[in-house]
Amino acid sequence: MTNRLYYDSSEMHEFDSVVEDVAPPSPEQSRPSVILRETAFYPTSGGQVHDTGWLTLDGGDRLRVTEVADGEDGRVVHYLEAPARLPLAGAAVHGSIDPERRRDHMQQHSGQHVLSSAFMELYQMPTVSFHMGEDYCSIDLATPFVSSEQIAGAEKRANQIVFENRPVLIRYVSRAEAEKLGLRKLPPEERDELRLVEVAEFDVSACGGTHVSASGQIGSILLRKTEKVRQGTRVEFVCGDRAVRMARRDYSALSEAAALFSAQLWDVPDQIRKSVEESKLLRKQKDDALDQLAELMALAALQNQPETNGRKIIARAFSDRDIGFAKLFAQKVTRAGTPAIALVASTVDPPGLVFAQTSAQASGGAPGSTADMGALLKQVLSTIGGRGGGSRDFAQGGVPAGSNLEQLLQQAAGTIGA
Image 1 (cartoon, rainbow, N blue to C red):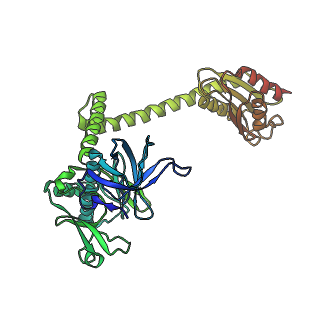
Image 2: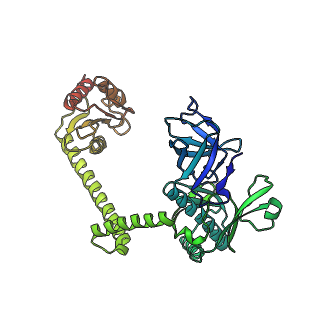
Image 3: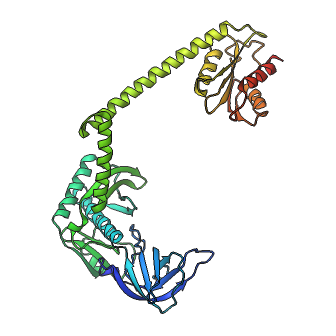
């Protein structure tokens, strides 16, 4: 069992210890690892991610600690970058923890305690899980919905506790005693002794993580967004230095957007809404215009094309229209009231073919409307390695770049004519 020095002092960044066990790289685990008699490195657990840092040997060799994890036997495993020389069991080492990473984790985890307690105090919304990521943290609340007013209220209350700079204390009690203290959440495991983290006169929680010694060290708590999850509502937040970095990034992005609109920062949402509505209108106008263009082009093509076996075969390759327009043109040709087959291509990247015909029902069972567009397309594509398919009346496929689409259309038209 590793003696966990961070339990009593989260602000410990340097320590001395002795190597108890060494595991060289193996097929199951490519990284070497060591186990120490005592450690101040925090292993990933309880929603909090691990520390990183260095182990220095007596000879001066420095081993980079890249990950720390709990072992199944209660010992703490320190994973290392592949070093030139692994220490031997019994060797003395000096541990150095990345202080900025540790401080960040202390701010986030302590901020989570304060924030979870604020949601509970104000709205009776218990926290069911906590996650600490590299850029942001989140808590999952046991509630189907959190309003914007509740987000603002919990954020305000949490920051009030931060600004009051209340002491954050660590103590150890029996489970029986803990049950009398009104903990926000009791751990499910049966333990003889529990480590409690207490924000004075505000929150008491059983926790094994690293924490600040006073709430003011958390820095500002900033709530960012919410989303529905299986077990309730997820609230994303950042604390301390992260909150400053995130606020600066948000401000820079908003300032850039405001400059593009030639507007004030607070006018950007209205400008975006206006732009979205204008974009929708322009898109509808464009779609309507393309629909009218395709219909006029289809009618002109049908008018100028003589019938063959009771139907009109329209073959057309577009060099300035995409496959979406080719499909629209084919639909207009085959739905104009005249039995017809449309063999259409687009050379616009990605190039493709659309084969369509007036359905037998729409053509009144005309004898010429018996082609199979899906089979015809596959036959044509097989000659060039293209892919596609469809039904008897409609088929679509892609062709390799550089294919001679005019030749493919002539090939398809000749097959139908035969």
